[in-house]
Structure formats: C-alpha cells, structure tokens
Length: 210
Image: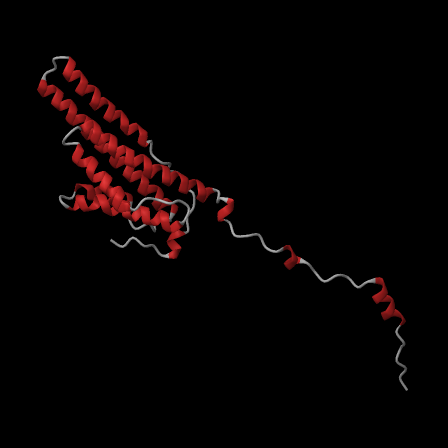
C-alpha cells in the first residue's frame, strides 16, 4: 500500500467536530469477561448461557474497537481536508473481508504511523509492529477473551495518545517547531541626516550662472 502523502496532504488543521474516542472504555469489556470467568469458577452457571455471555462481550468489545478505528480515521480525514488516503468507512469495512482482513491489520496502522511520523510532530512505532500487536490480540481471543481484548485496547491507547499529541501540536505549534524570528535589523531604516551634514548642505556655495 502506498503510504506516502503529497506535501499538500500535510496541511492540517484542528478538527472542528470530532475528538479522540474513549479507548479506555474498551477495558470494561475485558474486565467484564474476566469477571464472568471468575464467576464461572465460583458459581454453578449454566454453561450454554455463560457461553452466550462470553460471545456477547467479545462481540461488544470488537464493535467498540471498530468505532475507535473509525474515529481515528475520521479525525485524520478532517485534519487533512479528506486527503488522508484511508477514509473512515474503508478503515472499518475492510476488517470484514475474509483473509484480506489479516493484511488490513498491518496496512492501516502502517499508513497512520507513516503519516504522523512524516508530519514530524510525534514519533510513532512502525506500523508493522503495531499491526503485529493487533494480530496477537486477535489470536489471544481464542485462548482468553479478556487478555485478547485488553491487548487490543492497549494498542488502541497507544495510537490514541500519539494522535492526541499530534492534534495538540497542530492546534498550538510547539515553540521548538516554529521557524526562528526574523532579524530585527532587516526592518531598520537609514538614519536621518545629522545636523552637521545638514549644515554643510546649507552653507555650500551656490553656483553662479554667467
């Protein structure tokens, strides 16, 4: 996937509407899943009902994660005047394409990471490493849903923190990122003639015409 943007695509502004999602809320699903696991060990729950609860918690966590992904890309689209190469609906929709969705776990984080790093306001991990974390979290859901969900939203917190910092610096550019101030001497005008110079001009002999 082409991840490099034209120079015009780095002209950004503060989003007027959207704000970063509450990624931390995703941990509620992980905690609820873990609580259900402990309850299963202590209390005698119906296995079929408990399995439905587990599925609903994982599904709810996954839907909320896709909401976070959509919001990340909506912010980037707004900041770049919709010149960012991945649109919010595309970022979510490609998670549902069989087999391609595994590639997509690496593709969109790579584009996002490259964009923020090229903008130069924040330093972000390579997108491939972020995608690997998402892939591991996806596989861990088949082992323990609580751990898998927790890792997914831990990666999301990292992305959200970098994006928040990027947005903050776009709103108010840090002093070290601003160009140096102009030299005051460039605005200085030539000094006015001194009194002695003016006197010399006044007393200079007149040329008599014959």
